[in-house]
Image (cartoon, rainbow, N blue to C red; front, side, top):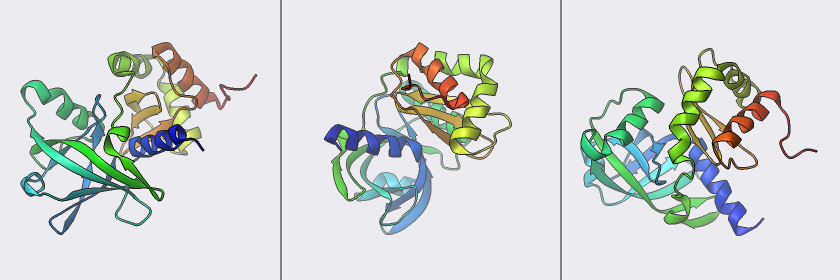
Length: 210
Protein backbone atom coordinates (compact mmCIF):
# COMPACT_ATOMS: atom_id res chain seq x y z
CA UNK A 1 0.00 0.00 0.00
CA UNK A 2 1.37 3.40 -0.99
CA UNK A 3 1.80 6.32 1.39
CA UNK A 4 -1.01 8.17 -0.37
CA UNK A 5 -3.36 5.20 0.06
CA UNK A 6 -2.46 5.00 3.74
CA UNK A 7 -3.15 8.68 4.42
CA UNK A 8 -6.34 8.54 2.34
CA UNK A 9 -7.52 5.61 4.43
CA UNK A 10 -6.85 7.56 7.61
CA UNK A 11 -8.79 10.57 6.27
CA UNK A 12 -11.68 8.31 5.32
CA UNK A 13 -11.74 6.80 8.82
CA UNK A 14 -11.76 10.26 10.40
CA UNK A 15 -14.65 11.43 8.23
CA UNK A 16 -16.55 8.24 8.96
CA UNK A 17 -16.25 8.55 12.75
CA UNK A 18 -17.57 11.89 13.96
CA UNK A 19 -18.38 10.79 17.51
CA UNK A 20 -15.88 9.70 20.14
CA UNK A 21 -14.25 10.62 23.43
CA UNK A 22 -12.18 13.67 24.32
CA UNK A 23 -9.56 13.48 27.05
CA UNK A 24 -8.30 16.56 28.91
CA UNK A 25 -6.79 17.07 32.36
CA UNK A 26 -7.56 13.48 33.33
CA UNK A 27 -11.22 13.74 32.31
CA UNK A 28 -12.83 11.75 29.49
CA UNK A 29 -16.20 12.78 28.08
CA UNK A 30 -18.14 12.11 24.85
CA UNK A 31 -17.72 14.50 21.94
CA UNK A 32 -19.22 14.91 18.49
CA UNK A 33 -17.36 16.77 15.77
CA UNK A 34 -17.78 17.88 12.18
CA UNK A 35 -15.10 18.46 9.59
CA UNK A 36 -14.85 22.08 8.46
CA UNK A 37 -14.26 22.95 4.78
CA UNK A 38 -10.58 23.59 5.55
CA UNK A 39 -10.16 20.15 7.14
CA UNK A 40 -10.11 21.23 10.78
CA UNK A 41 -12.69 19.92 13.24
CA UNK A 42 -15.45 21.90 14.95
CA UNK A 43 -17.34 21.03 18.14
CA UNK A 44 -19.20 22.53 21.10
CA UNK A 45 -16.92 22.23 24.12
CA UNK A 46 -16.61 22.81 27.85
CA UNK A 47 -14.64 25.75 29.19
CA UNK A 48 -12.19 23.32 30.83
CA UNK A 49 -11.34 21.87 27.42
CA UNK A 50 -10.38 25.28 26.11
CA UNK A 51 -8.07 25.83 29.07
CA UNK A 52 -6.39 22.40 28.92
CA UNK A 53 -2.90 22.02 27.43
CA UNK A 54 -2.96 18.33 26.60
CA UNK A 55 -6.10 17.33 24.70
CA UNK A 56 -6.66 14.05 22.87
CA UNK A 57 -9.68 12.91 20.87
CA UNK A 58 -10.33 9.18 20.45
CA UNK A 59 -12.47 8.10 17.50
CA UNK A 60 -14.82 6.27 17.75
CA UNK A 61 -14.03 5.46 21.42
CA UNK A 62 -11.19 5.37 23.90
CA UNK A 63 -9.29 2.18 23.05
CA UNK A 64 -5.97 0.99 21.67
CA UNK A 65 -7.60 0.46 18.26
CA UNK A 66 -9.07 3.95 18.08
CA UNK A 67 -7.74 6.84 16.02
CA UNK A 68 -6.01 9.11 18.54
CA UNK A 69 -5.79 12.79 17.66
CA UNK A 70 -3.53 15.19 19.52
CA UNK A 71 -5.36 18.48 19.09
CA UNK A 72 -5.32 22.19 19.83
CA UNK A 73 -8.57 24.02 20.57
CA UNK A 74 -9.25 27.61 19.52
CA UNK A 75 -12.41 29.21 20.83
CA UNK A 76 -14.80 30.52 18.19
CA UNK A 77 -18.31 31.96 18.43
CA UNK A 78 -21.58 31.07 16.77
CA UNK A 79 -22.04 34.65 15.63
CA UNK A 80 -20.06 36.51 12.99
CA UNK A 81 -17.37 34.92 10.86
CA UNK A 82 -17.59 31.44 12.40
CA UNK A 83 -21.38 31.17 12.50
CA UNK A 84 -21.46 28.86 9.46
CA UNK A 85 -19.10 26.39 11.16
CA UNK A 86 -21.30 26.18 14.24
CA UNK A 87 -24.42 25.87 12.08
CA UNK A 88 -22.71 23.03 10.23
CA UNK A 89 -22.36 21.13 13.51
CA UNK A 90 -26.04 21.72 14.30
CA UNK A 91 -27.07 20.42 10.88
CA UNK A 92 -25.15 17.21 11.56
CA UNK A 93 -25.90 16.67 15.24
CA UNK A 94 -28.74 18.92 16.43
CA UNK A 95 -28.64 21.40 19.29
CA UNK A 96 -25.56 21.11 21.54
CA UNK A 97 -25.46 20.84 25.30
CA UNK A 98 -22.36 23.01 25.62
CA UNK A 99 -22.51 26.66 24.58
CA UNK A 100 -18.82 27.29 23.90
CA UNK A 101 -17.43 26.41 20.48
CA UNK A 102 -13.98 25.44 19.25
CA UNK A 103 -12.15 25.08 16.00
CA UNK A 104 -9.96 22.04 16.57
CA UNK A 105 -6.61 21.73 14.80
CA UNK A 106 -5.06 18.28 14.52
CA UNK A 107 -1.41 18.40 15.58
CA UNK A 108 -0.64 14.70 15.18
CA UNK A 109 -2.47 11.38 15.02
CA UNK A 110 -1.97 7.72 15.71
CA UNK A 111 -3.96 5.16 13.75
CA UNK A 112 -3.53 1.55 12.73
CA UNK A 113 -0.06 1.42 14.26
CA UNK A 114 1.15 4.46 12.32
CA UNK A 115 1.86 8.09 13.22
CA UNK A 116 0.48 10.88 11.05
CA UNK A 117 1.20 14.57 10.79
CA UNK A 118 -1.92 16.57 11.55
CA UNK A 119 -1.71 18.62 8.39
CA UNK A 120 -1.89 15.44 6.36
CA UNK A 121 -5.26 14.63 7.88
CA UNK A 122 -6.68 18.16 7.66
CA UNK A 123 -7.19 18.12 3.92
CA UNK A 124 -9.52 20.86 2.62
CA UNK A 125 -12.72 19.65 1.01
CA UNK A 126 -12.31 20.01 -2.75
CA UNK A 127 -16.11 19.93 -3.12
CA UNK A 128 -16.74 22.69 -0.56
CA UNK A 129 -18.08 25.22 -3.08
CA UNK A 130 -20.47 22.68 -4.61
CA UNK A 131 -21.44 20.95 -1.36
CA UNK A 132 -24.60 22.96 -0.63
CA UNK A 133 -25.87 22.53 -4.20
CA UNK A 134 -25.23 18.78 -4.12
CA UNK A 135 -27.10 18.46 -0.83
CA UNK A 136 -30.06 20.46 -2.15
CA UNK A 137 -30.24 18.36 -5.32
CA UNK A 138 -30.09 15.06 -3.49
CA UNK A 139 -32.53 16.07 -0.74
CA UNK A 140 -35.10 17.39 -3.20
CA UNK A 141 -34.75 14.96 -6.09
CA UNK A 142 -32.92 11.82 -4.93
CA UNK A 143 -34.37 10.94 -1.53
CA UNK A 144 -35.24 7.37 -2.56
CA UNK A 145 -31.74 6.79 -3.92
CA UNK A 146 -30.33 8.10 -0.64
CA UNK A 147 -32.50 5.67 1.33
CA UNK A 148 -31.41 2.76 -0.86
CA UNK A 149 -27.74 3.73 -0.52
CA UNK A 150 -28.01 3.81 3.30
CA UNK A 151 -29.64 0.39 3.32
CA UNK A 152 -27.22 -1.20 0.86
CA UNK A 153 -23.95 0.34 2.06
CA UNK A 154 -24.50 0.90 5.79
CA UNK A 155 -27.25 -1.70 6.28
CA UNK A 156 -29.34 0.94 8.00
CA UNK A 157 -32.95 1.65 7.08
CA UNK A 158 -33.53 5.39 7.34
CA UNK A 159 -37.09 6.61 6.96
CA UNK A 160 -36.24 10.24 6.26
CA UNK A 161 -32.54 10.58 5.37
CA UNK A 162 -30.97 13.97 4.78
CA UNK A 163 -27.70 14.53 3.00
CA UNK A 164 -25.78 17.02 5.13
CA UNK A 165 -22.26 16.81 3.71
CA UNK A 166 -20.21 15.55 0.80
CA UNK A 167 -16.49 15.43 0.10
CA UNK A 168 -14.35 13.48 -2.38
CA UNK A 169 -14.29 10.44 -0.08
CA UNK A 170 -18.03 10.11 0.49
CA UNK A 171 -21.38 11.32 1.75
CA UNK A 172 -22.64 12.25 5.24
CA UNK A 173 -26.29 11.37 5.81
CA UNK A 174 -28.20 12.43 8.89
CA UNK A 175 -30.67 9.82 10.09
CA UNK A 176 -33.00 9.86 13.06
CA UNK A 177 -30.32 9.20 15.67
CA UNK A 178 -26.90 9.47 14.05
CA UNK A 179 -24.84 10.46 11.04
CA UNK A 180 -24.28 7.68 8.52
CA UNK A 181 -21.19 7.67 6.35
CA UNK A 182 -21.37 6.39 2.77
CA UNK A 183 -17.85 5.94 1.40
CA UNK A 184 -17.23 6.68 -2.28
CA UNK A 185 -14.79 4.64 -4.36
CA UNK A 186 -13.41 5.98 -6.61
CA UNK A 187 -13.21 9.49 -5.18
CA UNK A 188 -15.83 12.04 -6.20
CA UNK A 189 -14.40 14.54 -8.66
CA UNK A 190 -17.13 17.18 -9.01
CA UNK A 191 -20.83 17.97 -8.64
CA UNK A 192 -21.96 15.79 -11.54
CA UNK A 193 -19.77 12.95 -10.35
CA UNK A 194 -21.37 13.12 -6.90
CA UNK A 195 -24.81 12.45 -8.32
CA UNK A 196 -23.50 9.50 -10.30
CA UNK A 197 -21.62 8.14 -7.29
CA UNK A 198 -24.74 8.20 -5.14
CA UNK A 199 -26.74 6.44 -7.86
CA UNK A 200 -24.06 3.75 -8.03
CA UNK A 201 -24.16 3.27 -4.25
CA UNK A 202 -27.95 2.98 -4.36
CA UNK A 203 -27.96 0.47 -7.21
CA UNK A 204 -24.96 -1.57 -6.12
CA UNK A 205 -23.21 -1.09 -9.44
CA UNK A 206 -19.44 -0.99 -9.58
CA UNK A 207 -18.45 2.35 -11.19
CA UNK A 208 -15.08 0.87 -12.24
CA UNK A 209 -16.62 -2.12 -14.03
CA UNK A 210 -16.80 -2.33 -17.80
